[in-house]
Image (cartoon, rainbow, N blue to C red):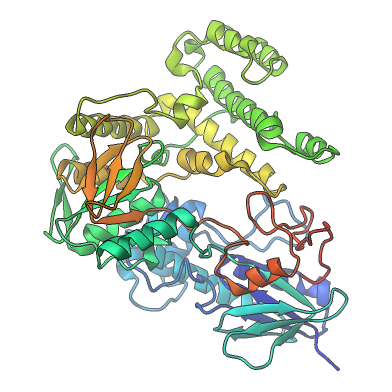
Length: 565
């Protein structure tokens, strides 16, 4: 008799989470029947590629240790039983206390980690490996796990038959009743602009590093003391900054007033960084939200999304969804302002809420309501100003820009750690609420992901304090907003300019694109996904693999969900 078989392609956190859920539900779903689980990933299970142990110990997670968990509790809405387990912070405490054993070599990271700290990624790797091993151990004996440290390169099989998963270097496929893709960040073929820059660099003996996961980038071509142009001011830049400074032997000292000073090793290049906004992502917020939380979702919840999904003419993000997002974020902001800081408002909350609910997003009536009810413009939510903080700002020269950007970052750090600005944290919760709703649709608009990351997924505060120290030391130089890079064929260099300092430019023989590759099934380097797309799997307008909202099954171009994928 043929044993039932499931192939899971990708053994990182999503694949590990699936194993944990199978273990939790096994008694109800399978009884004493046999099952083969095949996990396919060239990287070790648990951490997978992104959270693998084999990366710099200087790289951190971007979430507090107490906020990271792989387990369910009573707050999770799901079918199946709750199987609680420790958060990353609780796990680290248990390891320190001797209740959990892990591989040696993590003592320093474990000793330094508290609930409100940002763990090293290598520590997260150890946590995920432990979760994976615990989940496998919880499976009943008749469910067997088979690990394949290879790359899945092709998926074949009829809709009504068993599937074949071909692995690199293997002459026979894995045969499966069901295939689950739990893939994460993947490379893609660069778009024409990037290919042209790479070709230009090759012609002139320059260095061009296209978008990539920073921990995988070969940075050896970036030479000490030489200028390097960097496009991108998000988390990929933060990793780059760390690897090219502390990663090359530099260090920080803390003065009596708490200000950091960077001590160069002499091996650092000079990073000239710019982006569309020209500023780094906002710092993580460094306080809790006491008192009443905004009742979310309010204007963009399941009911509103159901109505949009039912529209026969489809959904347009800018027309249909973005106004609801704007109203949801505004609701959270003003709910917190009126309930926690009523002295900064002119009317009571119920009256404001009633009129706010009746006003259209972005309308003159809404602006008039806010203007009459919130006297200080600094207390009003201006999403456009948040998204473009340097719009219209001009500096007389590059040195004035450095001073201005340092003041901006210092102000951001102060604000993000001051509960007097707690409406910011309410907006953060609203962003998470919106994100939860947008999971149900395939496209999130070209604007949304960048805006969400900029406001809600910025670096830990200590990283921005390090950035300030690097700026004062001259190791990092700011380029400004609307940064453009051109390839000068005559001089054989890259040249960067920005709107913030008209007429100024910086030339360099190296250019780094500090961002992840664009997610696209049409240009993905992953052979399995590329093959699925070529053979008829649908993609969304944003280039993602199209899946059914209800259960994540892969859709073909006729909109049919595949019964076994």
